[in-house]
Length: 299
Ligand code: AMP
Image (tube, rainbow, N blue to C red):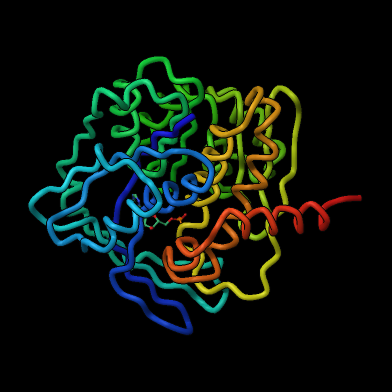
């Protein structure tokens, strides 16, 4: 089955203590769509400006990503720049230039409206609503978010939580949303806000799932060297949803395994700038790491 993904389609300028790379392909939808493409057909919804390099469009196509819902508008592509500290868990946003995103209204091609799996990747909650409004009875909807929307669009976000099956957020956002710094204590409070599945990402320490079936802990793949963690969260969400859409049986049965696949694709993402490493992967590389992770976590 296929996955529809909406989110930011961006040019990212990224600085780490070791290197600096301008205008890489980035954005939550780009990372999530490439990650999901290893498992399922992907339809991407977004907007880019007329400055968007053709080679990036080709890269989406090489991954078989359906671009019928990607608008190309006169103006500048969304541009984000960020800088990492020596401790790569700490990042500072230097600039966010919305460009064509400022006036973006996602419009779904008719053929996209019945896509069974939907990932509302990180983007303004009003746009996530707009996409959901156009969907016809999706099977499973997951949403990701970021602290910015908790700060400036909380009402829209809270309304969204009533409409989705799964919420994917990081531990800091979970604490902000619930006033609860203990993640385990935050989980029931997050369910009360709407979603049946809550997935809290804890960066290099893995992620936690809470659902009617209980709690599950997914490890992160241990990396000796992180080159650039930008997009790891989006890759996790995309890999997870791509795997879920490809899995036989029920979501309940597949979601734990899907998180492991998400973790593995996210680990590859961290090993290169932007999408450089992820776009060079094959399914066999992913499977190899899944097996290693299985061994590492077995007891
Ligand atoms: P992550 O590292 O998972 O937090 O995701 C980083 C990606 O989010 C980058 O590729 C950025 O282009 C994108 N991004 C940064 N700020 C925003 C924003 N305000 N809205 C949507 N996407 C953003």
